[in-house]
Length: 219
Figure 1: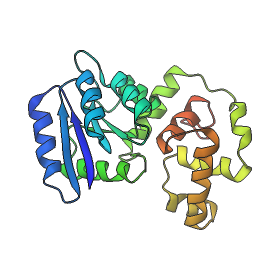
Figure 2: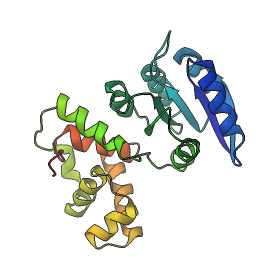
Figure 3: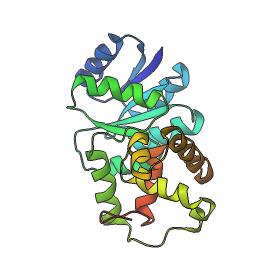
C-alpha cells in the first residue's frame, strides 16, 4: 500500500486529489496539509511514501517543505504540483530533491501514475514538458561550461548513458540507442546515481544541464 500526503492551500484541490487517490487500489491518503509548515509536521507524524506538494503556499512554501521533509525522510518521494509548465520554483524544487512535477490540470490517470512511478523509485520525467522546463531554466540561469571533475568517476559508457538520461530517454530507449541489454542499462543507471550521489534520474538530468554536459542543442 502506497501512503500519500496531499499538500495544497486550496481546500477543493486538496480534497479532490485525496478522494481520487483514496479510491485507487494500492493507494491510501494518510494526511492532508494546507501549507508547508503543516506538511512537515504531518509528514513526520504519518511517514508517507509520496508527497504531492504545492509550491506557492502561506507560512512555508513547497520548496522549503520539500527540503525539510527529505532531510529527515530521504526515502520519501515528492511530486511538485503546479499550474505552470515552466516555473523557476519547480526547477528549484527538483534541485531540492523532488522526484518530478505534475500540472494540476493533468488527467486523473496521470496523477495516479505519478504517485505509482515515484513510489517505485523512478523519476517522473514525463510528460515531455518536464524536460523542457529543465532545459529552458538551466539554459537561462547557467551558462554552459565544461562538465565538472565529479564526472571523472564515470566510465565512458556510464557517461554515454548519463547523456541519454538527460535527453529524457527511458531505459528501454537507451538500450536501443546504445545497443545494450536493458538490464545492463539499469545497472549503469544505478552506478551513475551512486557515484554522483544523486537521488534519482531527475537530479541526474538537472546536473547534466546545469554543468553543460548536455544542452538544448545536444551534448
